[in-house]
Length: 370
Ligand SMILES: [Zn+2]
Ligand SMILES: [Zn+2]
Image (cartoon, rainbow, N blue to C red; front, side, top):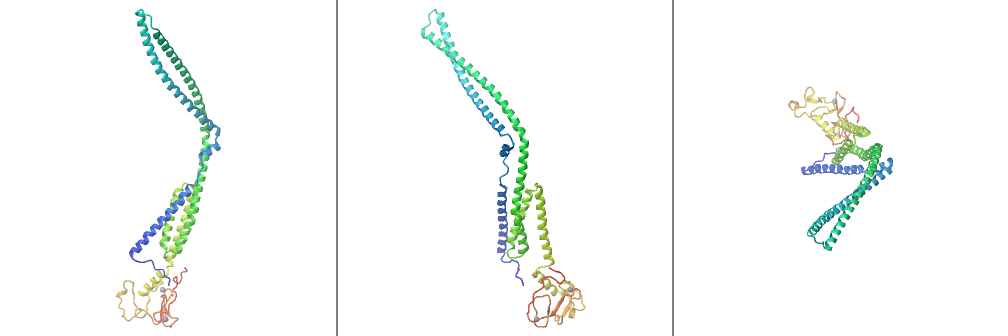
């Protein structure tokens, strides 16, 4: 007898087993997520590097230089304009002073007096300042005009350079796209290289350990892996080949599991088989083909599993027969001589009712090969 009783215990224990199985699955899922994310951070193609390789770097350099010069000239113009503002204020001040002094001089002359020496000096000084300011203002104006001319030239040059750089762009972008596709391919391959061996391991464990003591671990592991594989599949579905690779693998996995389940149903495990045999013997049916076992007082009766209790059969009539019995339909021996005590025993149950001798039960019903 194999020792494959399902795990049973206090309900708190079973609840904890469920809880930790789920927790185990979630942790595995996280771990896989870390792997996938790390693989996803592999460096991809570098746009500036491609630009340098395919484009003319001189153009870009010159454009940068010209842009610097433009900025420089704009700054210079700004500073000139600030100076001009200061000169303008100063001019308007000296203009006012000059006007007042002229007014004063006019009054003095009307009163037929000779203007004081100081007043004449102040007037001359004021005139000189006013004229100097005017000259300075004009000078700055000339500088600004010259700067504006330079700015025009540089901006024209910059526009031409930008147009040339723009003309190179389609080739660079095509190359970048090609490298990006190749990079995506590599990332997907890396993810599969991690996931597929694990998926194989999960399937193998599922087939080997199913129903065993540690099956919750296997289920948690397998489920987390399946979800992750589905996620990667979804993420990389646009990549042409991967959807075929992954869908073929998924079909293979599902087929393998389905075959296993179908075989498990056709060739039940020993304890299921024993349960089936025991129930059949209890209801006087052949465990293999379900034909009634008509022995002793039941020889001429007819019954089904539900009508069995209503049969008026003497209580003394036990099923155990005194002579060997073979099912007339499927030719399976149902009662036979015990090799130990030579009395008649159940052929398909483990122990002899007379001497207790035990025997190995066939894994599969006769006629089917496991
Ligand atoms: Zn039979
Ligand atoms: Zn015996």
